[in-house]
Image 1 (cartoon, rainbow, N blue to C red):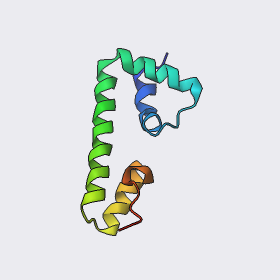
Image 2: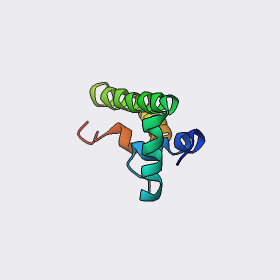
Image 3: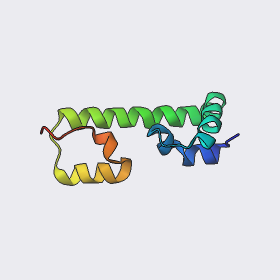
Length: 83
């Protein structure tokens, strides 16, 4: 079973659906039992959602888009090719 340290280290890969099966069950199980890690998951999930929504609805400078992508990955920006 994953502990808090391992779960928090793997949280971004978990949110990106990039965890290997060997870790997925362990992290999922830990999140189901640990309220501290569950709160961290919910915060990161909501933060990504808000950023994605803002990027799609607000005009952002290219430099800010680059900073967001470097922190959270391109997937959080969504499809902005039609801007």
